[in-house]
Image (cartoon, rainbow over all chains, first blue to last red; front, top):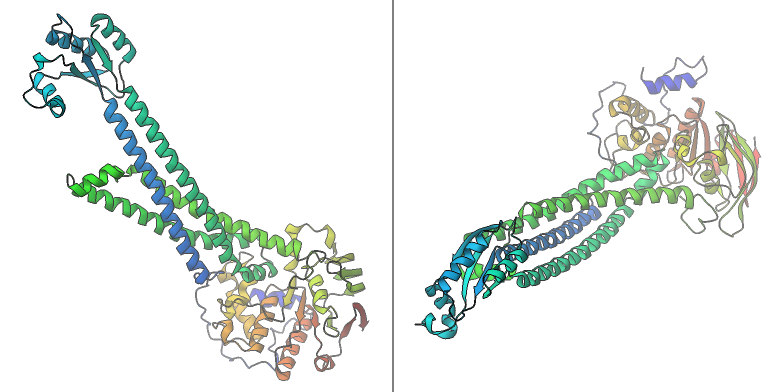
Length: 352
Length: 219
């Protein structure tokens, strides 16, 4: 005897309790043989795919692709800007101006030794006559004799980027010992570059915020649109006694799957695009096309941080869609319980 | 089991749809709720199913004042009431079996624990051979019986049916009535909202007649 029959029997008067559930005479006759009934594996409460669900998945995929593309772009600009900055700040230059009675070669060597005595310097190179002549060749032509002209000479000092020397102390000491020496730490250029890079990153960040905002709003509206087509399911579940939490969980699960698929597709596509561009760049080094692209966009490599950002974007979009689904379902249930059950507020609303 | 006292209801600022309703629905009783179209039968059923609050008056269900019941407890109370809608409200993507099992599924029960009960109930309502079909394939009478089976699945103490014979031919209406009588005999209180006089004449049961928002009861 199954549970259903047992409970039914317990409600019957004692004289009748020995009867099994009677088949009503007028209903179609059931087979007397108790064959084992086969039922299909239980389908999910929400239909796994419909037009609205597919459209939502495509919208999420597109928004995720755009967001990841912007994120990768910002990460690329930041990497390029920081590489410019580090390339320039890796070197400083000591310029020695010619003066009457000054032994240029000895002064150059002294300046180099003096600079290298500071902690944070790595190497010093004196630009010899031929290198200086080559440097001036575009302006003064070939066959230049440096002895005939009062041309300043340069010492290039390579510094440790992570532990740079005290430039002000070096400048003061150089000035004290070699009045004709002038230290250029490229600070002006670095400052300009840093400021330009920061502006670029800020603009990129602004675009990223706009894209994310558009994405959030699109996902929210698309989710609500898709949910409205399943509203009748919320109502049926509610009226068969489902608690709000159960209904919300069912919808959350459903929309989490849709959004994960959509956002993963968009994110993977964007990551793939960056990977292909990076691969193309690495394979076509020193070609005019690659040089041009590198000059315009920098390196297409977005690095581990960029890929992690793409993963984070996928997760954020999935969570956002899930939360939207939850809030919308809870609001629908609230509307059924509070608004539509209140006759003062339900004038004109459907009577279900 | 259910007690209404001076219950009145109006939508918005409109006239009172239901006025001074005072009645009881005892456990294990069988009654028809009837009246002309627009008399307020569906509204009264909604009040009985807790999907509408009265504008005035007192409703007690299962010995509890409805105004004192927090929202979080409403699903538990609804589980004690089964409802059959005129338009069935079956979910199109679920089979007959899955639709009927829905009340148990939302309670978090394991499918294996109720499979036999659901099949047994479907056989009882004459749908033993239609277990695996989708609602789109069912006839009007079969859909109605599936909706009744769903309402009965969790052993409600009272069954409310809104025009259950509205979409079926007279022989099927007679079959459905027998089903309700059988159910009532097994201990469930039944309220059938209908304006099918021929159906009511087949049974000597209590009649609740709504006219212009007022209720007259003929025992």
